Length: 384
Image (cartoon, rainbow, N blue to C red; front, side, top):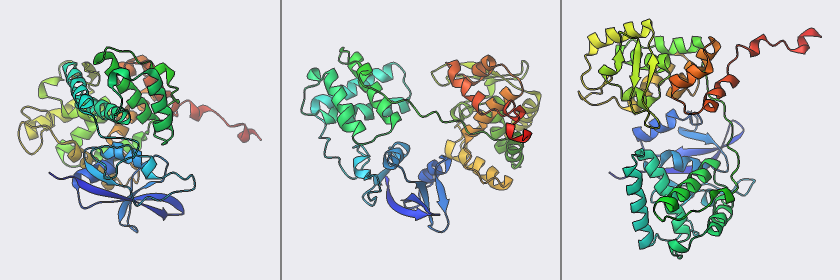
């Protein structure tokens, strides 16, 4: 099936510089944009748009990779003299080649395939394999004229300075490329390149988006459809990721012990989470009404899991019915669950286990969005 073409154009909207996103009708692309918190739909412009940034083309490329061709020739220079041409990396999914990157050599193609096979043998996820091989491909195309055995730490430093930093790529893109290069040379080439020599910027500390308990209640109560209501309720009541919900099977619900068993979660780890009496009652009603067979939540075809894009539509419908004008995603329900647990006095260690976080520092981010303690603080202004 041919890929859609997405055209980016500069525009001004509500006195702000934005980038318009134009494409022929495509439900998959539209669902991806709708699920992203930064994307907005404009009735006046009749298109999706996103606030302008130096990395807007790169960010959209990462978001829509393998889903569409990205035509960014309509983007013009802004005040910082940054254009999409010097932002976005080369890929088979781009329309316009970057002059700094050459055709992949036959040696490099074979090495990348060997790297991909190694990742598969270690059971890396498909998304990680795609991300790492795409990142490595960019690096090897940059040094296509040089034998791989001769690539050194100096080449890695020069690539970081002359390609990544010069073109103002995002921090996440920089880390992905460096991590892929490190792993490739250690596993396939049996040669160590030292990423510590590449000075990496700190990641932006972005706070998770959290809904109030009242807002969550409005979203969950907006649906009359039993399946839709239970799916969203289970994500919030157990703090599930979307993929975890859709991989659930009936036998993973242990109603006798009030537990939900999560299999092969992020990092290929199993875990158990508590099930409250309210969600167990809802699940019993759902079992009677829908009679799931293979997966707990099945799509139109029996025995196949519910589609993630359809689940996103379920959330969007709930938001519309609840009258909430916020760019809520399914992951907001997980963030809200963790924050509400913390505000109810649950220990961070238990929250970490329930969410399946490997490091406690990941869970500690919710202490920054919990308002229970903050609301007790009295501003000195009130005493004046």
